[in-house]
Image (cartoon, rainbow, N blue to C red; front, side, top):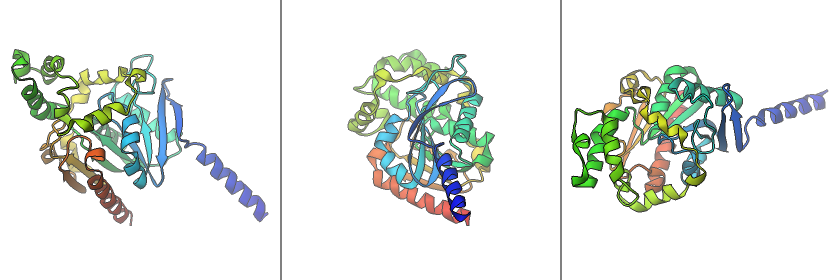
Length: 305
């Protein structure tokens, strides 16, 4: 009888582990298949990439060694991005994205998890927390914006205009124009030779990130969400009421988000860490990021006791 019980236990464990395999396409309720890769061990942690539209591949390749030391990381290519399919009905609403995250969690058999956002992923992280607080045990913001308008208007645009100089036209320089219109006026004058200055003090880091993804095979349809108004919401007022442990890691030379953006976030249970880096701490200051994650996992441990 005891042997039979042991066999049943093993079968149950094997069945459970089948939910989580390294690489898979998970079909959403609207038929869209999303690419998911699970690496590492420990507390499950959903990684929400930025861009919008950058995909999770380069984080897994370049930052995976650090992240996977601390967590079981679920790398997700958001709908219409990277190795994931585009929705047939072009549904890129924020509510549909949040539904995707929940359906991935359920498909993997995970009861609750941490959520880690990078860059634009901060918008998604906050929106997901707002909708499903009970399924999120903690939040990690790595060089994140929680308000695209503030980051682009106050940091990205001034830096970009400084880079292109007298090529900046009337629209780009008009503070009364919509931020997205000003950005579109600047984009034609940014390229691989100068754009890196927005993201990092050293071009080599930007080149490393760009070379870590095969963009010729990369779906970029999902990047269109940057033109959708709901993604431009300011989530900073919500930070006052988040009752979960938070790591907010920022770069003092990160002009994509803004070196001073952190001053507008007020999480009650926050580990705030600033580093002398740009937008890519996992390759610019890996030891500093690793230490911050170490301290955060200790914070989580204390919280659970």
